[in-house]
Amino acid sequence: MTERRACFDFEIEFANGGALQGQDFRLDIAGDDVDDETLAAAIIADLRLLMVGRVAILNKRIIEEPHKRSAARSAESGEALRIDLSHVIESGMITYKGLPAPLICDHLSRAASRRHYDAGTEFQIDRIEMVGNTGTYLDTPFHRFADGEDLAELSLDKVSDCPGIVVRVTGARDRAIDWTMFAAVDVRDKAVLVHTGWDRHWRTDQYFEDHPHLTERAAIHLRDRGARLVGIDSFNIDATDGGTRPVHSVLLAAGIPIVEHLRGLDALPAEGFHFWAVPPKFSKVGTFPVRAHAILRGRI
Image 1: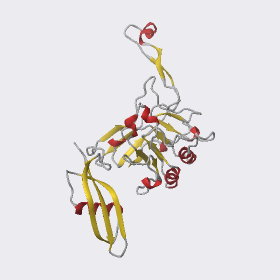
Image 2: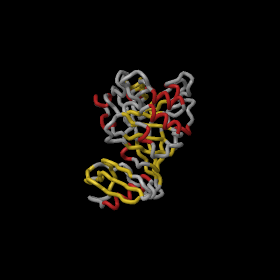
Image 3: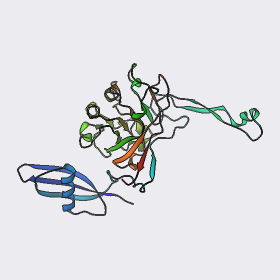
Image 4: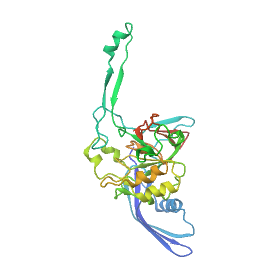
């Protein structure tokens, strides 16, 4: 089903004086068209405006574009819908340019195992050689700081059954995602998942170049407002064109785990789900792949 959004400019005059203007504003619509009064009411509600006098909708057009607010189907009442948000890890694939690809092979093949067991009984044991930064992975403070908590010390409260929200920045002209993108949402005690749509470039050269990332001010905003975890569907949560990593530094210093290389965030609603990204319990390891997923219960 084709989803549509209204794209328009607006002018608002307040009954007690003052005015507000907006350009290229976009809102999800249910059908093929929408009237000006409905758009005006949506703006007033979205921006939580009071004492509104006149609203003018200008230059309205309808575009085909995925909805930003209700990108997931509602789970049936009383049932849980599980949405996988992790990339598949395969031998030889590159997650992070400059780091080695994983090597996955047999330690004990099925054929070789047969001499150890009775007829009809066989097993396969894998041998996996890889860096922790492979696939969809989680960063703990130990990844950045020698005295930070590692995977074994990480509290499950930070990475399991976390109330989640999705902040959609797909289509943004600027690759740098600033604090203003988070200003309208309550991030306290939430897993904040940043949907850039960059996962569409996974396993291409484009994935590594000019990728969306957070700014240091965005990281400070999320830290100061109590985010529990921050995830992104991009190559890195930091800009990688220099040698500093301020977003990692700010979040991990505050004990806020980071999940990078997420996928499929377009399948989630803006809120009303719980997020899981539990890694193995390795000591003295700061980063490792996770099976990130979301669970929706009841109607969204």
